Length: 303
Ligand code: CP
Ligand code: NVA
Image 1 (cartoon, rainbow, N blue to C red):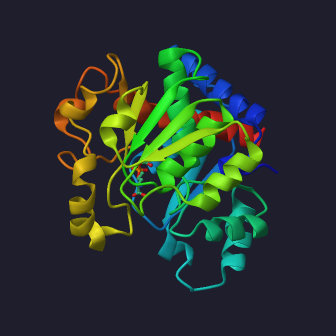
Image 2 (cartoon, rainbow, N blue to C red):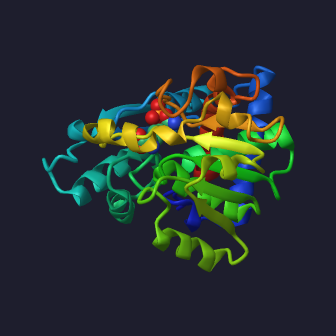
């Protein structure tokens, strides 16, 4: 039984398999094909946090491939202590072919998987967002063909989205620079784990946005206050203000440098309208690709 809990649990070949399936399914979708690859399959989505892209893209992916499913809040599923996690996992997984979990704790997803009879997908935790990072590579492959050797510069908070990007760029031979204020960089433990598996990984960290973007092929940002950090928003807005991705910063990047964002965006905070709506922004291609990646991932997990 296969899961997607963290990208570091996959091999590079498996990452390519998921990306290739997603690309093929997108090409078929454009030809209006709706192959019933998941007919009779059932997906349960259990989310402790809000979601637009993850929830709807998995739902659409199931429907278009002949499957079906259900969404439950964490509370409705009983993750609030109504019963034990083990019991919730055993019961939900006995009805489902796969479960997407969106949680605060990464460990909750790992524990759920240990009791599960079906495939578990990490739909975002405080530490990781593997479906997003896979989608981002699918999107960059569409634009560039080959991603190996390309330079991704992440400007912002070094948490879940940046963590998953650090893993996947190292797996695929890209270089990544994380440009964050002090105390918001990637954790040293994560960097060590990545370097253990991928000794040639090229991840650098800096606090200087202008220097960071000077050689970028793509600049990526994410919200300054993630879900669960709303009470810190004012403080974070002050700390991250010099890290806004605006036209002035993008002018310091090479011509043609792309802009990416996982969305939702706080326009006027981490990114300005002129950048996110500008000609080099590929954010809505990214967002659409969440559905194509969900299809490729589900087919990979369930076949
Ligand atoms: N990018 C992303 O995961 O979006 P949602 O929070 O809307 O699912
Ligand atoms: N870092 C953001 C990502 C949202 C998709 C958050 O966790 O809220």
